[in-house]
Length: 294
Length: 269
Image 1 (tube, each protein chain N blue to C red):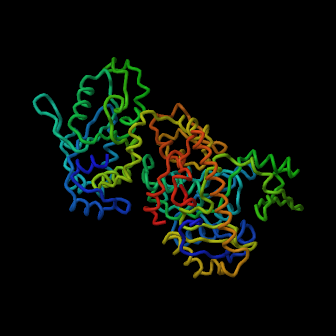
Image 2: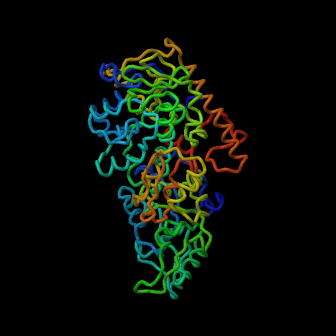
Image 3: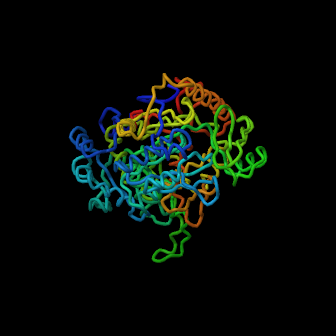
């Protein structure tokens, strides 16, 4: 199961025009967090909000749909959202917290829920965990470097970034620039190279652009609560869906990228183990399922 | 170890499905299982660990009265040991606090606990890693000579370590239920930690960042109980003035050890 356990795979997008306009792809995260807030399934959400430097996000406890909307769009550098879950529970007093997390953050949250050694009464307050697909993450200085040096544009002028069709794209007010994705390799953080999870396999539901047409997202519903929230949002008209079978490029591409990530990173894990370096995952020769996430 | 716990508790290992230790779960366990004899040994610690245990309000009454038999302890039960009243045999000894090497009573007591208890649990970070007592330098009233405080495993063999300053009420409840159920899969990380007697915010730098494993997720900063860890440019930054050497930041990191099977059970994924 290269995509982890899921109930349903669908192509989807938010119906709200404002969300469509500013979201990265289908606006699923923004729409679902807002919907969950409106329906009181969550009291607030930890999101990657705008920071003081452009394109350098900071975790933020969003208490309104406006704040969630203001955090829409992918940032390609770290936002340590898990850190702020405690603040959401303690300082904000939230009983039901929603959050958006990349695979490693999802893993940190799930480990904390199963083994809450030092984390007192936070695990039970995580009401919704939306995962996003992630191949790798760039340190902020890496982004600055390849945008300013390789693409020749000031990061301050960039209005949107995107990864697709094998390229890293930036959009300014009047330009559309791209470099082949392979030119960004070597700029990602090393920790990403041992990660075996592309599609946030342990989230309540996960989403990302891969597999769906432009402006749409592929959604994998996973837990009962994730599946139920998604269905309610569809019933309420917040989200519209298409069958994965009817869209291009389809689930095959998602499976291919997930397999590529696992295969490549499993090799890094094997190499590390051969060198005697620590890594919390198993070597390929110890695994029954070579595509499993550990 | 599995055989030993099973023998001590007189039960067959039967892993549960891993739900949170709910009231129903505790009641079910209370009805079905024999009551293990528990001792609570209080060495050099602040009583925070037992306070955290007692924060399990919803399960505390059945836990203390129906699930376990407290045979030794100064706080939970008014029973302790002197020359006339020998220390009783115990299935599980929860040891709170580190061992003061200048305190002959502590040394004598911990050695006696090792003799009398089937399973010695370093309960809380003072017992597991020394925690803030690692900073002791003596010269304080009322015992100026008391200056050396070491984790329990420096003095006797420890079977399980449960770090935390204090450990959360939930991990205590989950561990007690797992121990009574003989759920070894759940306890395994704590058995593995029994040999770890040093913990520090610097573990994040040495064992995660330096080892090219950090992904800047922020789990360490969330888990720090003294707010000594913050995230700076996607990496943990440890304020050593605030770090108490509890070891929780590294234990909680998804890149230190990874309990995939347990998480799959818990999430149903």
